[in-house]
Image (cartoon, rainbow, N blue to C red; front, side):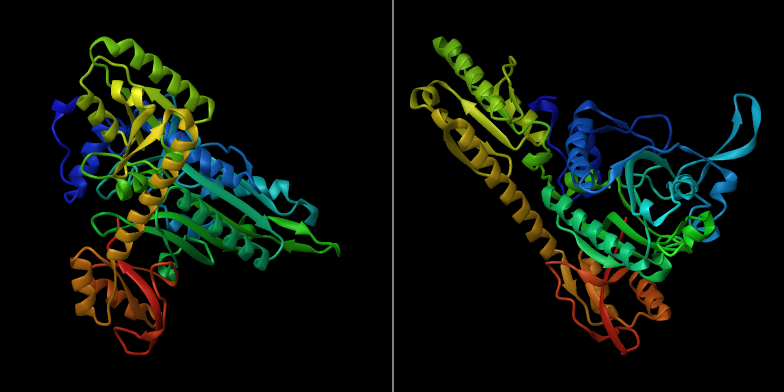
Length: 478
């Protein structure tokens, strides 16, 4: 890529901008010859590495990482009727081994409850075995029939983190749900992505769950993207798969469970929420490169500048920063374009005048520029990266606030949604009124018990029937 490659589409045309950016910035290649399957470019996969490294660090506090098989025997998959009903149209089946028909069909996991829980039944014997808290990061497969889109709606989810826990009581499982919500908030705080948490209506909860808590973010076009879910499973799966334990009194008790998931949609949100017309904007914590040094070599000072740039790179790397020296034989403008497109948070420009002044020009991908002292480079870069993080987060939060509105009638709700907003309405929590809201506004009723720094969740009259209702999030979704 060089500066002659042409500008990206305007971000206001979000769909075209997103697809073009994935290609130009070398995140994903969509040309794989199976619909809904995509290939990570090395640069995109490196971003994935740092994002999931943060997720691993958070989960490893009180979960243990594991790995279960991809293939699930049909008899295990079909045990939980309500769960399977939610996935039956999305399952890929393996029916042959080579040319030999299999005695038992094998499902490619759409999610892993029916792979993991038969093993939990073998692992759990006594109250001393509880709680169990495990997670894995795996690929899952779903025959997606809607329009596919890389990382947002795919037939192979390449990076699905799912945690599964087992507890002695319903209340202990509920405490685990709250713990995982807090973990999710911390994760997205690190990514500078504003989120809204709500309890999904019963008809939209995870199949087989007592309830589902979902995490949504607002995309640039005003649609919501679900980027995390936590499910209290009660004892439904435990009864189906005979996950029981002997309590302190010698009695057999059924266990209670939770499951929790975050997919590569978190990276889709990272790209979409922060990026601009120039390309990616990556928070320093998850940027593949946190700074790039661009030497400006003029005349007979070439060697001096390169030597100083190499010294600066070494000092920053020693301090723990991810840094690259771009000494390619390209015009400075081409290099600027290259690294802006790829979202590197900080560009350090070093020319003869800068060298004489003992400084380097620091250009922030989040906007603005300053200088750093070569004598205190690591401290100065640390400070500038912190400023960049704050600026990225503040801009994302401000954009989220601009996309939120309240609506006291269906007409007001339609106006809000048509303007690219997500709305808070009052809903009595009756299914009939919920269906009416979705039908009349061509939208999705996302949930109640809304938790957000950007919404004041108060009670009020249902916009359909007028009965007392709860604050409810409504949007158009992916």
